[in-house]
Amino acid sequence: MAKQGASIYLAATELTALHDAGGYLSSLIEQCSEPPADLVSAQEGLHSLIDKVSAAQRAARGRVVLRNKVRQAVREAESLLAG
Image (cartoon, rainbow, N blue to C red; front, side, top):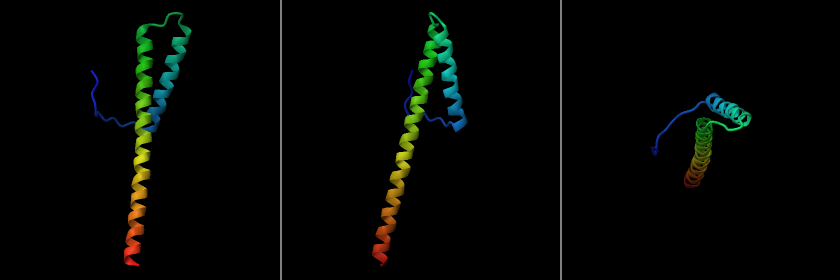
């Protein structure tokens, strides 16, 4: 069951650990002639989580850039009005 709007917070070290775990899973899967379905599912779930975290980070950076542009525009407008 998927839940929308759930928030999780990851430190950079935790995201690195997820990438490492994905690498370990890939290695295990590559070594199996017929990998167990649960390993493949775990790898898919892990990649999905990493993708979602990456998308959230990109969106957050975009919001920061936009917020900074708005603040700069407000400062310029205030200086024009004061000047």
